[in-house]
Length: 572
Image 1: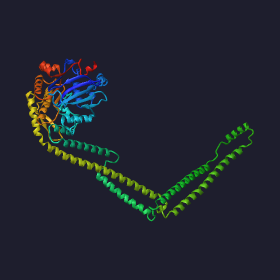
Image 2: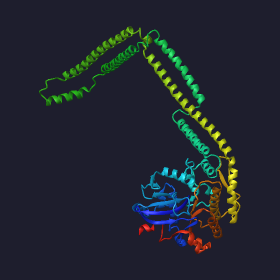
Image 3: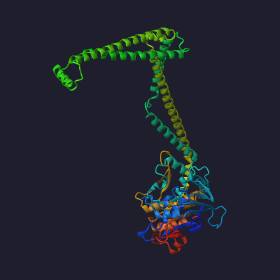
Image 4: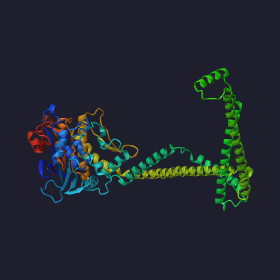
């Protein structure tokens, strides 16, 4: 598939920009002078291609990825005018009209949708469908957005060999291996993806086990935990035997409710007895305290006070001696009252003790565990038994969980070993296809005097799958930029030789650092092949590279400047 037409449309049907693509080199030209570069919008145009090809983040049209600055004017324009991008793909650019053309539409405004040939579709299904259309990859392994960055290099700022790594920095080597194996027809991608998935599962289990062991007392060795369980089982048997001895001959199990009720009644009686004993202690202390106190006061001072009060209240006919006698009577009355309470409590205590003795006697046939009048013995043993049983249950659960982790991790490690071996064996066929690719790649690089590199394949799955070898040290930024383009051109030729269905287009950003003669040679090479390359480039660069005005006019598909940016037509 080739790129045929890109349109920007606002307010449902008003076309504000239409660009037609052709075979060979396609220039998106920034006509501004040096001090105004990056304001014309050539990179914005390439981003529109990327968004039409399933990029998730539409906002990166107006948010700078490096500075995070937002172009609020452009954002408002897109949202207010309901602007969408439409990209037409075609299997044959030589035919003006083809029944096999595919029209992609992405609404650039907030809460907009995506469409393929007029049918609204979710982002996930949109990219799956594009994988079928552009790669004939109905299994979606690798995914479309893992593959398309090798053909659409928007903002390719990396002036190093990391151009081979086009995905998120956290992407694992096995994912890259699956991609390169797919692109170069090496082994089956399923094994690599299964390997990656299995490794992820193993990581998840190992993290889950680590988290589990960090909780409570779960961080134990399996063999030690097994010994603890066996020891607790032995203790449990001992306790069960002791309880059995206590209840033997009482038909305890058949009379459980009766025994339980009796135990409750016994506890209540003991509680009442304890309460009576406590009250007895308090009253005894009061009696002792009252008896030990004497009426001590200054007789002369008290007499003088009494006489003074009596002169003020002549109706009082009591003598001072009457007052002293009255206070002594109060003390005696208090003692009599307290002693009467003590006597009553003694009777109640005796009565309660008799009731308990009678209760124990009446129930001795069903509660033989009341030996030495200690019914709590059974409770202590059953409580201890319950705690040990709970410990055993908890320890068994921990043991079972740890064994499950160990078993699953062992299974996954065995599966990973098998898959590693399978991938290694299936990768033995790499040499033929890499030789084919390098025949194009090395020849093209040699033709522009940029050295003699090869793309090397590494079978060790712990390594990144490919690398550029035999490059001269100190390679310039321009050389690397041209190397990327050589790589992409060589891959197009290689894919055609092995009949690999891939996009027939390449999209590149910023080739200003490529030397003029090399750029001219690459343009000639591109135009000689049945491929399509879209590049954003400065007018100054084309002039300095001695690209004729006639060729510039022929190959330019869009001219941009500060006064003629991508979205400017929408402002008019």
